[in-house]
Each structure stands twice: as C-alpha cells, then as structure tokens.
Length: 538
Image (cartoon, rainbow, N blue to C red; front, top):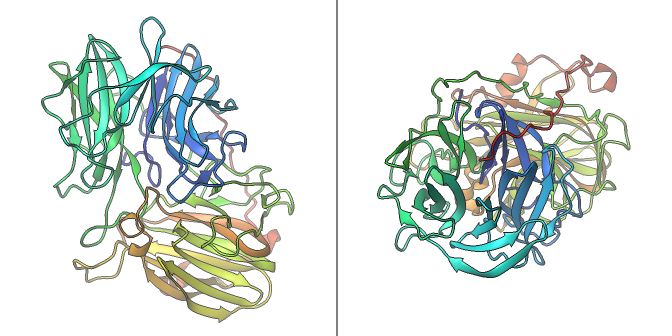
C-alpha cells in the first residue's frame, strides 16, 4: 500500500463515508468532464466511477484559462442524497450545487448559489437541519442547498494564524462536543499547511488549536511537500483519517513537481479533543481492517466502447462532432478545431500522468489531417510528436518559445507514436531536472527511432505556474485524425528504464499495425458500485 492513494493530478480531495463505502471528489480546472469521483471500501484502493459534471448544461468552460475553471469541490451525503458544491471560476460562473442519489450518476443540473461569495465552498447541516456554507477567507452564510438561496450576509469566522497567507479550503464537522473548523493556510506552494479551531456552534466563536498547523512539511526535506487542503473521515474501525493534497518534487533546486497535486492519506488520533496527524508515509502501515483492492486498471484502450472511460479528459468541452468513437468502430476520431496545442480550443483528449516513470503509445492514422501524441501542462508548456502525411516532427513549446526539435519522414499510412518519461541520466546535481521526456516513432517490426529527448522541468508547475499537472493524450491540429488504440504503461518509479533506442529491441515486436492483429482477449468490465445504504454521514 503506497501513498499517494490517488496519484497524479487529483488535487483538493473531499471525502464522505456512507455505510461501508467511501466517495471522494477532486478539482478538475479547465478539463471536461469535471470533478472526478472515486469509490473505495478501504481508503487506500480507489476506483474512478465517473465525473460529477459530465454534460455541457452542467459545465461551461469556454472562457476558462489554464488553471481556471472548476475549483475545490466539497462532497457530502445528507438525508439520503449526495450533495456536491463547487466553484466555476469562468466568466459568468460562480458557486453551484449538484445532487445525486447514486454517485455514479446521473447528477442533477446545477443549482446556482449567487449569494455564496468566493471559492472553496463547504456544506454542513446542524442538528435542526440548517445548512451552513463556509468559503475561503474564511466566511460563512446560511444556505438552502436545494434552491441556492442564502439568508443574511456572510460573516467572518476564524481565518488561521495571524498574517497567514491564503486561508482557504474550510470544512466544518460536528465531532463529540465541538464543532471543528479545518482550513488550509500558507498558500498551496511549499508553505502550505492545515490548521484547525473548535467552537460550541457552527458559527463560532472558534478557539485555535495550540499545536497549529497540525500538518505541514514547510522547511523540511520530506519527499511529500505542499501538504494541505485536507478533509477528515472515519475508517471502518472508527479510527480517524485525513485525506489531503501534496506534491512529490524531483530533481535539484528548487525541485520540480510534474504530476500536479496528488491525494494522500494519513492517520489521525485525538489528544485533549484536538486532532493529531500521524506520519505521512510513502509506504502506508498495515491497516486494522480488510483490504478491498481495486480492479487492475487496463493500460490499453482500444476504443471499443460507445463512450470514453471516465478517466479521459478533454480541454474545456467535448462535442461529439469533434471527439467520437462512433464514426470508425474501434477507433477514436478527432476533428481539428484549434490549429495547435498553443490554442485554447485545440481538440485534445488525454489522461493524467500518474507515474513519475511511464510510457505512452498510440497508433495514429493521419491520412486525412495532422495530429499526434502530446504531454501537456498548459497552452504555453507542452511537448508533442505530430504526424501529417509522411512527415513526423517533435514540437516543444516552452513559454514564449516554440520550436520544431526534430523531424523525419515515415511511410504513408498509420504510425505508432510513443513518449517515454524517465529519471534523468546520472550524474545528478543541483541543476538536474526532475525527468526527461523522450519522443519517437515505433516501426512495425518493433524497433524504435527516438527523435528527441527533452528536459522535463519545463513541463512543471515550478516553471509554468498554475494548479494542474501533466496530461498525456491525443490531439488533432488539422483535418480528421483517427487513433486505433492508446497504451499507458507505468514503469518502476524507482528504477530508470533503458533509453528508448536501447529498450526497443527488448520489447515484443508489434504483430502488425492492422486491426486484425489487435489483442482480442476479453477484458473484464467492472461495474459501478451499487447505490449505497446510508448508515451515517461524515
């Protein structure tokens, strides 16, 4: 069992328990569909069961800038229904509420709450059924979540340590004799932390914990940094646990994190009615309850289903006329809109990079257009290998600079494009980046031609800024591009793989690029969990 429990770009976790089931939601920013939802029975093995905002009428992102869009959901279960409140930071957006009786969906159309100010909204119900909404800042207002109507004006609560930067991510809980107000402070960078206060009513006044911050790794050499934006939940045995975001920086100084902010888990004990957060371990201790391992995620998608898996995300929207598996059976078809990954409306469909060492491959038919395989952070920071006709090229966009790094002719017809991400070669020093990104073409006989190897630091938050992580996927820059399959293979994060041009000879050769050579073994499809039976809410 390892931390993070949900690796890759899965920040701002919010969790609730319903009977023996746990559900967790994360931020999604400029990507569509929005707010990924996960299910677990043991707090350490998680399966994505859907996305809460998966229809255009729920999610408008056309004006979303990179690292804009959907911020910081809170997921709660109350009175037999799931409630999710979240902020859409686009023009004309605001705070919205969606509900469902089954977390796999469908989720309702949004109820807007214009009287709720700011971001990071939280929902909690007191003993008489009154709902309180608390937001970053930290302020609070009474709310009817079924209509979005607020009552009175927002009033300020406790906002963390004196002078602390960015008090945000508030969550309120009734635990024992107290109401607890959990917040993040210090900003979501290296100074991030979690603090808590308690009071006798949900509106305060609140007494700060004398041991604040109860979680932070600021000023340490811990491998997990930027720890914050937490939520509390009880384990199956009644013990307490905290989910929170953190990053795993790599390379030299200042350290670059490339996967985005990930979801971690830590134990919590109580001393004098205050929570004490235990060690944040990369290898989790043995848990005192039975484990429920998730189905093994399939590394390869042959696009045989009518709809894409919930882990696939696109930029800002996903209209069927631009992205479909129905036009050519067993293929993903992308129709270009924006002319390159520099454009906010480029047609791109990808998955989050979840491993520090990994390899992604896809078979591309670009005879009707141009497109390929990309590693994306935002419009100004991406690497891609693109095919058009009989020409393949590697393009690097780093800030205001864009260049064609390498190019090569290929035979007409479908071609396998690949990206491998690995630890940089030795020796390492203070200026060594976090990883290297190698891009190339795989031939029908399995040999590999590496076109370029690029420094991964330029696709990191410390260089680009923002709140997201890398996404690896397919795009169309001109005309119509078809993708027969996509394969994402995690490599051992602790062992540097052989360079691509050396390891190609060790791989099993492709049988062929033709459809008739595709692996046809039936793959089990795991169903969604049954609608939960309510026992208690957290």
